[in-house]
Length: 109
Length: 113
Image (cartoon, rainbow over all chains, first blue to last red):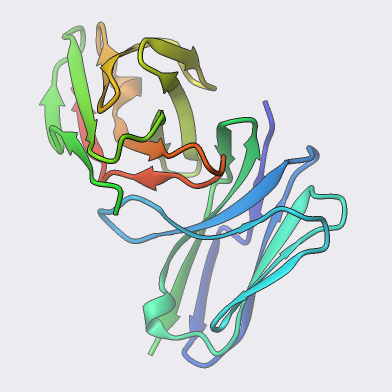
């Protein structure tokens, strides 16, 4: 079983602060995804990274895929209360997707 | 939205009873998945399907079976529910263009007493 470890598990910050969430594995994935989940809903895909070293930006969110394609990070600049949610990384192996345990982010106004 | 609906959304049942959760998608997606979500474990894959009548086991398949007789429907059955199967169950579909692009339903909360 391929495992994805996310850190931190919980993160509570003030509005306007920056933060980084990490996703690490001992396995290589063909691609890595970041999802965001709000209470009572299913996860929603934010981004897919495929190439080692790849960096993608989505407004205030920056996603990076490690050179060895085993780890990834999500950086949020100037966090807002609307960023509150559960952030999940997921690695693809064929057509199966393995999820990390998630980082619960709370942004306080 | 991929038009995925799950039913029932909430169910309370007793240990030993059979339970079937239904997932219906209207996007003609080839791949469909059942995950369970528990605190501290993220989402764990139970079973998935890569076409009509084509299914395979995931990480936590013991105690669960699935069936896919039509492209749009993917059923998850607990033959004899146990308390350890209390969880939130999510169905997802994938059109087959990118392995990581899953579209999720809103979840089914199952409580086994």
